[in-house]
Length: 132
Ligand SMILES: [Mg+2]
Image 1 (cartoon, rainbow, N blue to C red):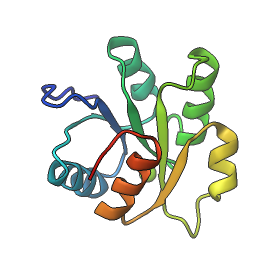
Image 2: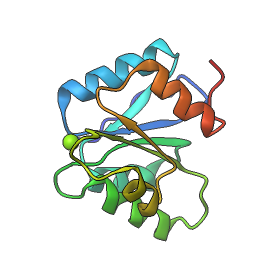
Image 3: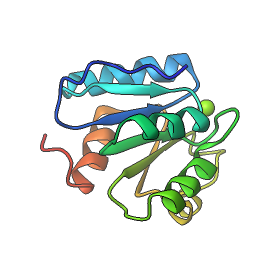
Image 4: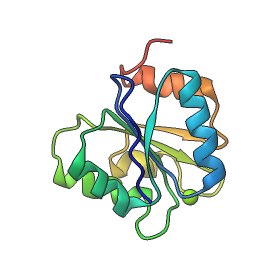
């Protein structure tokens, strides 16, 4: 279910994640950083969300039902040709593809589950979206 949160920060974040525990972890880490995210539970919901709002960054789970993170990223890159939306893969690194696969699909960066605050900060810093 796509859930839109109140915009409380200038950085517009979309979290694409189907697992409730992983959603909670990511939202908590983002909150520590002063960031709030809208939620999408699969790739189709991501595409719906992008019709309504624009985002600076999407944290994208790779394995999701309906449409996975790799396919969703390919669609986004085809549909929105500019690279202004930063897409950061969040994956179980030992099983779901590798960094190369994510980058080839059009993602900008890659972090492993369970995500840590330092990983999020590094990824956002690399995209020039966050100053710790
Ligand atoms: Mg998943």
